[in-house]
Length: 157
Ligand SMILES: [Zn+2]
Image (cartoon, rainbow, N blue to C red; front, side, top):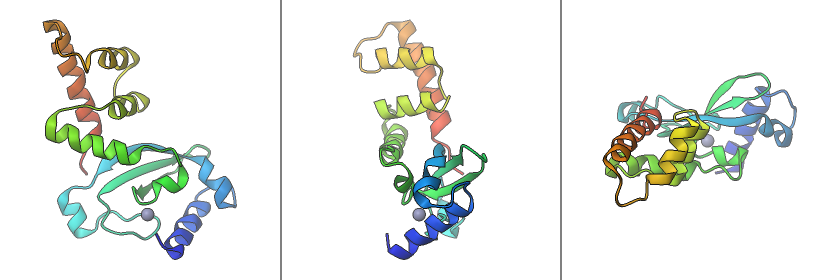
């Protein structure tokens, strides 16, 4: 990331925030949801980060808690807002889930925080997802919650 793209991102965000400085403005934003760009969208460069980075694949939609504006930034820039954001792990987990059907702890928690699954489903999933043997009922419920997670987070646009 060059100083120029940093500067552009900071400026674009400050323009859309209530505060006038980057340090204050960045605190107004949180990760709302993630999406994956389809291959066509990537090829045509449909999605561009506020920093100017084009042909985004991993899309992070952020929301301003004060003015409720939603903006798109790439996984290239989300970490500049939130130092402890687990976006890399979330994207990695989603790809793994699509490939292998395995759901990671990060993905379970992300699904819960973003209302893809409810409190009960979250607790249930954490309880059974690493168990080798599940009862028939547990297995059926597990598959149902898993489908819900996959449908809620593996969204291509
Ligand atoms: Zn960016």
